Image (cartoon, rainbow, N blue to C red; front, side, top):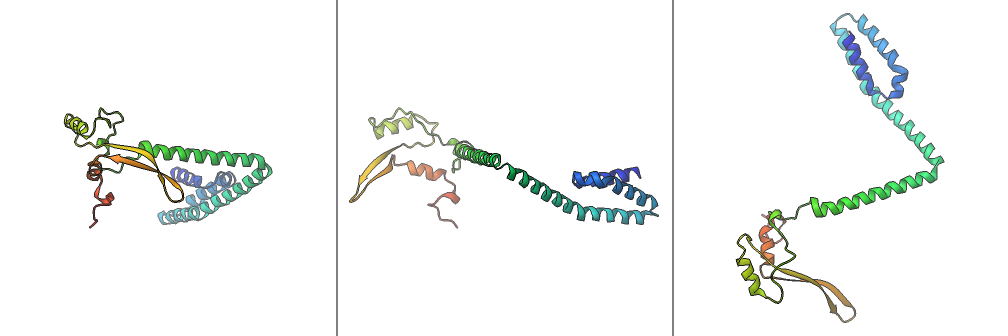
Length: 199
């Protein structure tokens, strides 16, 4: 019987603390008396089923009632201190916006991989022995001297001003080697490749 009473006391923890302070002791006493007076296993089983049913129907209602009371109390407190409430809301909004912005940058730069099959093998060299003065032959020779590179391509981006009939346009252009797009095409998965017809 002691184990049954302990288990019933543990089940009462699903009720809010304020409810338990007022009703836990009488409920435990009533359950203990009814469990002692139960005639057999059938009566005790019915007692347990009724207790669990009462808990399942009344505990969510009591929790919801406590939430409503706490919400009303919070509204009254914060309404009386509107300045501090406004500052807290502004600080919270700024903190959420800043954390979202920082995560977006970190996700784009560090966490999310490039949309290629072997993104770890795709590297960009900022310094190269090949320059515009050396020309295409120097790049081809440099690529042949480096057998650890499966493929290589060059590109150079810059801004260009285009003068139209009415307004001037500033556009970003890129000059690439002939195999630049072929290199990216081979690394792009078929489902993300716009040039591959989906079946």
